[in-house]
Length: 376
Image (cartoon, rainbow, N blue to C red; front, side, top):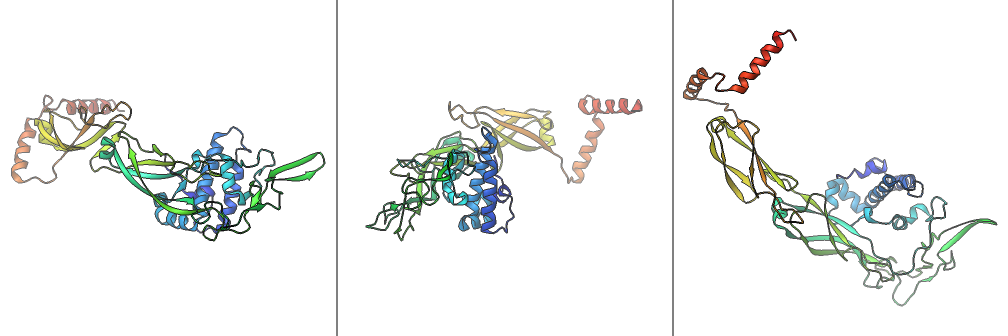
């Protein structure tokens, strides 16, 4: 399924400022947040789509690449796979947008877990040829991901220093508003629920504990994969929190256009032109396939659009490995330039034509006369 334009998703124009984009994302995210649309899977999908658009358009480098090259320009940029992320995790990523984790006052938000948590998944796109799909292949993928800062070991604090107790929440990770019988408890916006803050940040990562790093991995692609399918590479996502495992990398398949062949499931289709004499008299022709050309015998009297099947020349089924077939559809080319001799020969042939030679045309003419002869 093709992705929508990110500017369209957020409802802004391409000249929108960073603040305009931030406001638009907050408005759309609040509109489609699952808390406001309980049980509505469509709203949840739009909420995640908005988060993906904001991740790109709020990042100057990614936005520039997107403006110049579109979605294709983001390949290898270490995009988060929002479709697989938990809604609360998305909210924590952009908590500066909302201020409070519980943006609707429902009491749904809880203190972020302080124990180990899996890192975010990433996604990229892999372009394959039909030959790659027929045999299976291994692709080298280069992308950028957030990795543990080598200077601070991921703590975010300068060497020799430690985080301090959050002064806003006293280390609880939560703050209360209101008084008396009714109180609203929300995630602390100062420490984002961690209960501690970094007072002396690492100079390399500026307190985040992570730095962007290029990564190159070899990915094995099984034979028979389809457009849009994802191949998961375990533990190649971003590092986890508090010693948790890394996320995964999902490589989504894109199929390059073939010069002669089109895919329909495991079937390959080729459209092959022949001359009208070959169609009339029959011939053995060469047709394109994944492994060079194949010879195909067509019978005399072949009509425009006739389809012939070559067994076992398609693509393999991903599970059974059984190969599909190749279909060859015939088109007939009419010559546009005839020399004198050819014109004479065709004129002589035309004199011999009758309903026994071309019964389909004769039948059509008879139907035509009958239709208009009745005054319709």
